[in-house]
Amino acid sequence: MYKIFKLTIIIAFIALSLNAESNKTVSEKNSTMTRAEKSKKHIEEQIAREKKFAKEQKFYQGKDYNLSSHEVDLDSLKSIPVIEPEYDFSMDHVYD
Image 1 (cartoon, one colour):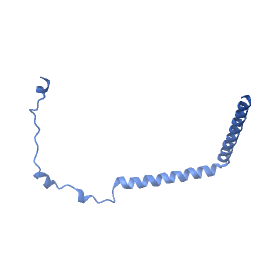
Image 2 (cartoon, one colour):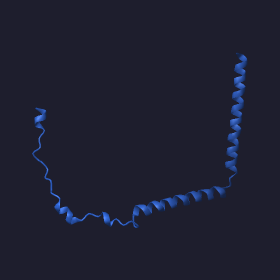
Image 3 (tube, rainbow, N blue to C red):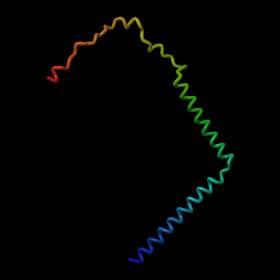
């Protein structure tokens, strides 16, 4: 039983040390990226965001869309009857 416990501790230690080493190499790669490369990457991301924003604004402003076929003719509204509301509606009989 003691040997299994000892073996488990050793395997855990090796796994943790390998994981720590792989994390170190990732941070080293990030630290080797120069300031110019980081700023260039940031600028490219901002340009992509601006392009997306411009595309969305073009859609929302709707200058290129012809919606005249969907307009309502005001003369056709005169043929629709006006429905008067029933002001004498009472729910008193429900509560009796």
